[in-house]
Image (cartoon, rainbow, N blue to C red; front, top):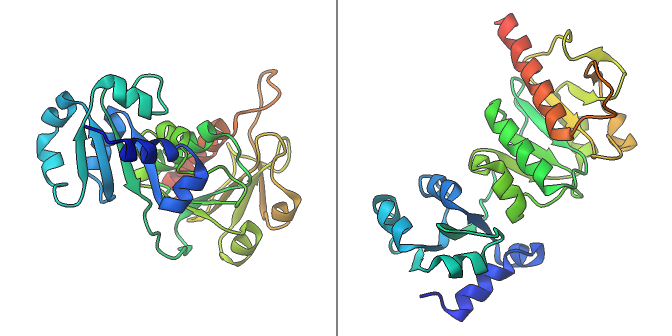
Length: 254
């Protein structure tokens, strides 16, 4: 049974100001919640159907004593969820305390400059996870990684990728890594560029590109060759192309 107090809390977490106030965010749907159950993230409240609770009883048993576990009908779940239909589970989860941000000489990070679309950010988190990139550094203006739309679009990858929000020029200028930036028709083709052991991959706003204040610190300008007539690429698609070429270049050097 879901109390009015719990229902109010869950619904409030759709909004950034209440996520910030409570330090909680939502994870929704069967796939994401199942992955969550096997992660080190702390779950405050789990609301799920009887079928879900039964199917995942063993994993849920480890939550007892530290998590409020509630059974609910599908209609109740859908009324609390950002999904149109949620027939499995929803969880209120504590935001992790991230370790201090450091840049190792042999690692790559995504640097996101004012990415505004939640779907794009979630997909970028998923792409980072696919290519073994464990840190994403965002400008303060970038959309909230704990938005339900971002969490859903990441398809569970938010559990493995650390996302930081900091002043980008200050971080980039002092990281000690090669700074790669994408610019249409400028610089080296990603197909032929030789990438080093580590670096920062800077991606700009969907409409404006990389800001001038950040572009000043880009030491390697990259472009993605165009063969058709499309005006531009989605930022997440561009990120995937760059990450793939980075990893292929590294494989050739090893």
